[in-house]
Image 1 (cartoon, rainbow, N blue to C red):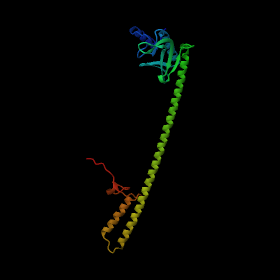
Image 2: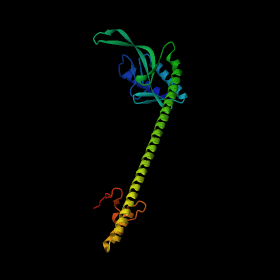
Image 3: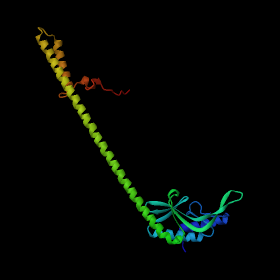
Image 4: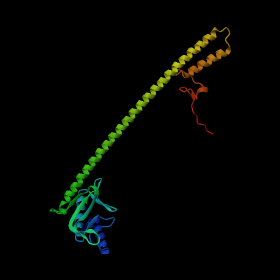
Length: 261
């Protein structure tokens, strides 16, 4: 009485299909309904079975949803494919004319959970399927817990991996920065050493000029110019020079400039 809307929709769908088409074997629901495939002898029992399962799921805070041609049981964030079928029995003899076996319904219902490649099944036996629904729900909740634990473990592993990668990137960045700082120190030392060499050379030239009886004004201008360029090149002085401000002191070449027209 008063079935769930999904069960009522499946029942109406099968009634329309049986009145429209002639089914000699199993009757299946159409797209957008609970996935049911049973013979003409089993629909009423199947409806009651699915209605009981859906209501039991709802009582546990779960739900049954239909999406296109698939029916799912949703337990928290996990979704499990679900379908109910009637088991068939194959005949022992090949049917004459079409070289295939004949299959006949058995009245045995089978509830299938999960995708085809890893399905879990419950079926009628000594204990009818109706009496095994609590075991089905217990399995779904256990499976959900395992999936959640697995997903949480994956998230933790992924978080640890990302943290390790971040730490390695930071360590590599520190190493590169340390090397760059040392290279800069070495370049500064080389420039300082070369500046001292220049100063020694300028001093020698100045001494030679002093020993000359009548040094020319060009000598004194050159000495001033040389001292200024040395102060510009010396990393401990870094005297500004308008004419050389675009020169890279490490390569002693002009930096590339972007020209705008």
